[in-house]
Length: 177
Image (cartoon, rainbow, N blue to C red):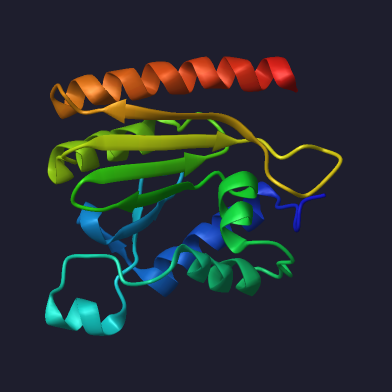
């Protein structure tokens, strides 16, 4: 059972709350989540922003605050709510890898942001991605697909492979449900 059910208007309110709470950035190394409109939430803390630091400082669970402001009482991990109920893409990167976590195929705006981040960050080793679909009978998450993409070619080739895998995963999800 999901923590909250959101109407489309409530989702828009959470997205607006998130932009106001975290701010937005074009700097992929500071990003925490990609919203459905392709906006990258800025997950640097205020000190890091003031000092001009370029990397994420907040934990992904901080997404709880804009969600709770919309009236949702979160009982599970807040990033589950963000990913599964609100359609956000969890974004994490280090100098050597990039990780994407989602519950459905990213929309065109999210894919565009992922591509921009691949080009901007040029991860050196791998891209990890996971798509989760929560079983109806229980609130734990079930990994439907997970993969690692080696970056032996250029980032655009890696993105094409990622998108192909995501589309295949979407077909698998539709088959399961």
